[in-house]
Length: 157
Image (cartoon, rainbow, N blue to C red; front, side, top):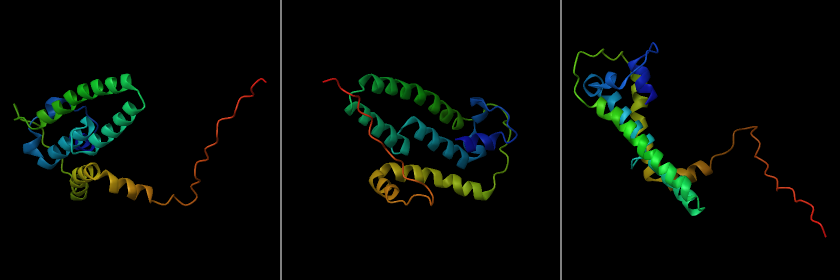
């Protein structure tokens, strides 16, 4: 999503939701990337955002943090409204002449097109991704974290 915003305002101008109108006609790949990123942040299946929220909220519910799960669900609902507002604007017709999108290097467009597939594959097959990540070797010179047991308090006899 941030790549899309940068592409619309390379000099750092403020981008509003109205600036996104008609993006699907001006730069279809950027509009698609914006949609996939917004779906991921909103936690809509089959993105990695959904898998992440699902695992975190399930773990919190299993530990008995019901209030936290309810607050997170409400926060997700509010977030979905705002994220999908951007997507709706990007796929709505332009009302007036919009500024053209600056040219984007093809190498960056290739990376942009990889984002949806990476998001989709990591959420649809979390077990292989998790096992691949756990089999990774630590960076050379990186020390394993040392976890010490909490000190015991002296008890009175």
